[in-house]
Length: 108
Length: 267
Image (tube, rainbow over all chains, first blue to last red):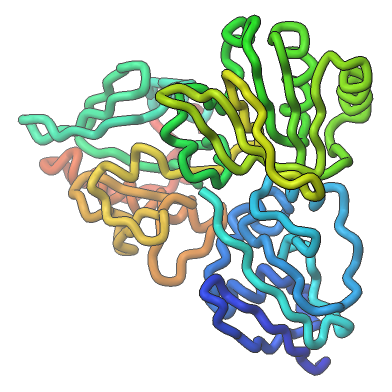
């Protein structure tokens, strides 16, 4: 079994949650948030089709480039910034140890 | 369709169930958006995530300007004839309507958050050409952040990444940011809700209102999993319970269709 990494999620009230994230379960950041019952809907189930898992990446980790699908969805989302990503597209890997993200506001 | 044929149900398609009302005889009446009425002793809600509604930009007074200049769909392009229109968005619908309405509107502005577009390459090219030839105004790296007007929209506030804030005068604002599922009118039916889903009793997937059941993605209960498998299970148990409500005087006998088939259908 691989060792868990730490991922920090700031919720919408800016409260800090240090989460243990397994790297050997094919999990992504949206699923991790849901597992810890943070307020992330993940409506589309992780297909980059709803943006309900929109997060801002706060740390300087080098992450895989967003795919066209992710960029297309971010184009339809609100409160998007340069550091916006969809949590469901961030597959948890060892290199992400110490990653810090903040949940983006929920749009209507 | 063959599978459901022996049960001879009625179908109402392309309409949204809007109202639920209890009748004097104890039955329920569901009325649709087009006024079709269905009378039944029980109602099953299998609405999935709800109905798909346009995603509304987070602009404070946007709801005030709905039908006063803000349109989330282009229903009748002629509506915009000789008018000034601002479209916002970067996907295919924003591009397609920009191309179409460029010929119809008096003045057309497309506002997009980034420089690149994710739509079909052919449409992207066409929009760039329209902008170059001055047929439309293309404002990229910008977002619409405010609306103003007195009883009717007359301008949108645009926040540009480098040029700051400015106003574009317009008659219409058409934000095209795709669709998002919403529970819709069902939310007003007096059902107990939990985080946008209908709370049910796992004994029979009944809601807090007798005779109303909710199955599939639209419901919630402790341990809920949004799986097709679970949806079938919920429907099966709910049917057993619904039978007793609908036909209180009849005995319910449990049968396997794999043994005896279905009345009216060859095995």
